Image (cartoon, rainbow, N blue to C red):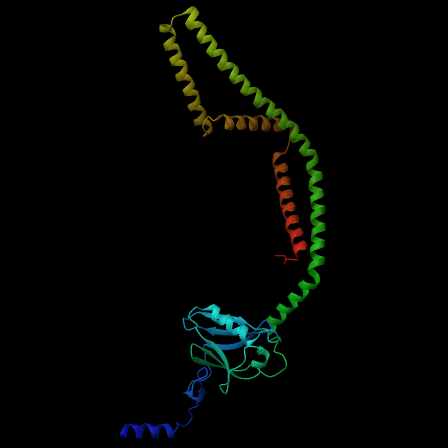
Length: 312
């Protein structure tokens, strides 16, 4: 009994200078209220960013998220659904007025932001201060927001014209590169044909040599000498051929694979021909790379113009 009287006296004698904020849980039975001496919650606050109000929320799990609001379009139900879907630990969420009355899910956030309100998450109420009065809060705060909006407006007004101008410039550059490459391409095609022919002839020459070698060794074995005499000769010929293949690997750092050997001979013949005709291979490659880059930019730009995507 003594303890109960002491608590009653303390509750009837509030401390001077102590501000009391009243909070109520979601639809508490019997009108039960909770009192707190803390200022508005630091876990939930509303501020402006790029001219739009943003609700910043620190969830019970510690994760912090930001919800951009469109006052004239976003409703209370939209905000609560976004809050509950953002964190799996949120099982219940509601918006209450400063007096503790439930706000309908169909209410626009423009009406809610005019006054202080409470955001209740998992039966824990957070007081949120209002941004200010007015029919709409979609205004700009700060020089950075103004610059951002001016940039968006400038992009929206000048982007189509800028894209078409850039498209025309790329087409002109593509035409110039094609004109420069036309004469070089004709010479390159002619040299490539000659190099291809020489590489093919070299392959046939190798086949003819092996055929003649096999026929000559067979003639010596059956008509001139006996197998006892030709066996060591063929052994040394096989060893010599293996040494030739190994020497090819040492010199070229490549295995003696016929497609690679053919490509290597083709390049040797091509560059020898280019050196004799003073064909600038580096200039040709540079022009081809630039043409491929311009064509890639044209494809990307046409997709942007067709789909109305932002250019980066």
